[in-house]
Image (cartoon, rainbow, N blue to C red; front, side):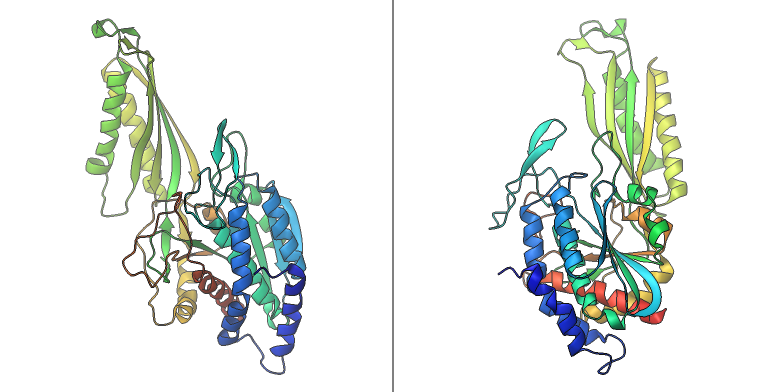
Length: 436
């Protein structure tokens, strides 16, 4: 059953009457939980709408309209068109206090869905010149729904809020299309934080192999920085029957691939912090008996420490160039920084950990391993203190079940977990504002 925006517009004022200032001075956590429970049906409806109507990065036009309409219906001040399709909603509290931000990402992936859900995506689009299926295979549908649910809960207690909340719906988290800017970096470039100036920012991600129904948070580095790596090896073309008559870039390129692995295994201290160097694409040649004059390799670098990141870059360049030179070839290395590491502010994490444990109840908040995936929430958290929480996407009653990973065509979110997500955001906001 879908609850219309018109019906939902009555909830904030009704809730304010129920939980008026005469009954309580500040929002108590048990009452926030009841509001989250009351909102859950609408959160599920929002999530299913987003899931059934996914849009690729920088193309979230209908998604943005839908989000903006929902925020306006709750009485928030709404700004659209930020970083192409981004939306922000400002919820002004009734009491003086700081401004804090909640961020949700909006874009889907070029993945053909295979979940078999009744609300599965059948959307197709174009990606890199090819027709592709489009799916919310990373949980951004749930992220948006939980952020809207939080906006609804907090709207119901806005008169008691000692501060305000900025809801950021960010496009292109998965990366802008080639030749375009986008995502958190572009929102900041366009002056988002200069206009609104939040003190801190909270974010959340579903999945990532967190056990069913659980929360996880890591102080300090939590997700990796990601760099794009391109290596061109320039050799000299010759017939495959006479390799001595040229310089074989395929052999040289293969040696470089192997040489790069010695950086991880033999050159840097793995006990300090992990990192990854991966070559995922190796292009060369057109025919079995012709040695080409060029090899093109593409890869990714993941790291968690800025000093080590820069050191890895220099080692990659030195390794590739010297291996190529030893064979009379030439290596041209291009490294492009994409996302910085997602770092949870240690003071903010320590301050809000009691809140997270309060919401988690009897289940201890997990201290997860470092995640070598990347998140452009990192750009926001680099500007102001940030806290990024992981929420399980799987059913807690299916003990031992390994949910399909994020970006899988089978990825799904156990929808009851979204109520926990709304509770997390709501309590983080209320507790932070009360403390400040």
